[in-house]
Length: 210
Image (cartoon, rainbow, N blue to C red):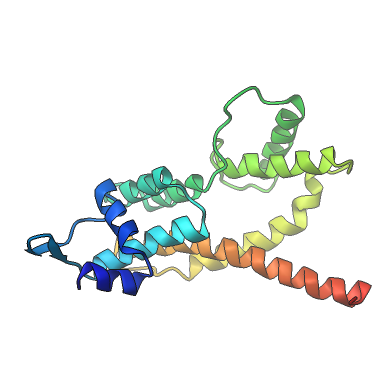
């Protein structure tokens, strides 16, 4: 297909595709004539992956590059490659001194994860995310502890088992990893959307519509 057809099929503007080509995020097509090239299903697949990361996951180009580079290394374990994508979702590392209340919250989150026997790397960005949520609650005047997160942890633990369980047990390495990466991004967005919908429903049921 031509680049215009690739654009239409992927929903990506031609200018954006050309940017991805210049940045090396998408391989160049097969030359067919001067200033023309043919593109195939692999190009379409790559564009859809990039758009899932950028549009739904809000991942920056540098992080997208890291994910794609990890995908291109066939000897990297699947678990580690999936981790590259999850860690790319942030938050970014500390860029200055960390307040005492944040350090305290991080220590409590570490203990919370340990108590649940979750096998999570010490540098996992999600640890900082959870600690930031705890700190925010406390700064708003709530006497919050990690115990508040127990119901959420129980639910997402089952969700994680299900999400990874629907990945193909066999097949190409890239297909399995791409499925896990896209699932991480898309299901996270779906979970947030469903939670908001449920809140609106139960708020109307409890407090009435106005």
